[in-house]
Amino acid sequence: MKHLNLGKLLQDARRVLRGEGFDALPDGRIHIRQHGAVLGGSFRARYADPGMPFGAPVISHNRVVGQGLVKLLNLLGGHASAAPLYIAPFIDNVEPQSTWTGANFDSNANEFTAYAPSTRVPWTTVAATTTPTLSNAAALLAATITFNTGGPYTIRGAALLEAAAKEATTGALIVASRFPDDLTGMMGGGKLALEYSLVAMDEEDAA
Image 1 (cartoon, rainbow, N blue to C red):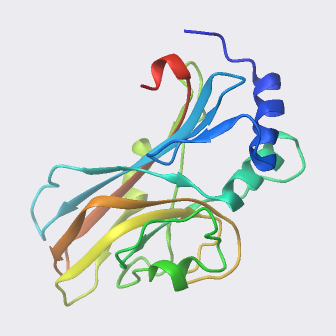
Image 2 (spheres, rainbow, N blue to C red; image 1 turned 90 degrees about the vertical axis):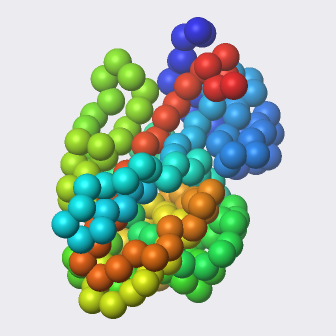
């Protein structure tokens, strides 16, 4: 494994926005060739019927959208302040595009809102130390939604955004993901746990 130099990574990451020295991988991750680093993440969604344990997770890699790349680079460069991030599930059968933003997320994907709490659920992470990963696995209860009375409900993907309000058109969209399998037949009182992990790795480990 090669050593990741964060200063060099920032310089190379800036070239992503100029279209130089990077590849958008088929699974939505970003390969920064000159640095030999790969940035990306994945969602894990687990459903539980009322009173039942959670089932096996549906796992999907994300697309880091253009607005998300700009936000991440400005954070690294000290040009923006960190904002809380929230997870929002969506309904439509669509593949996330690089042009999606916080302003058009709902119109593009049809955000799913028939759940408690009354806002999008928070992405609460623990600081990365020896492992270059950020995840809300330790705070998954706060990112677990309870479906409103009714159903059956279908969810096909999820996104990570800055705005807390459901169907908000403010704040940045960071990543979005279409699940490989539709989550169908979910009923009122059921629960869905939404986990997101963001990972940076050397290209040798990213095959």
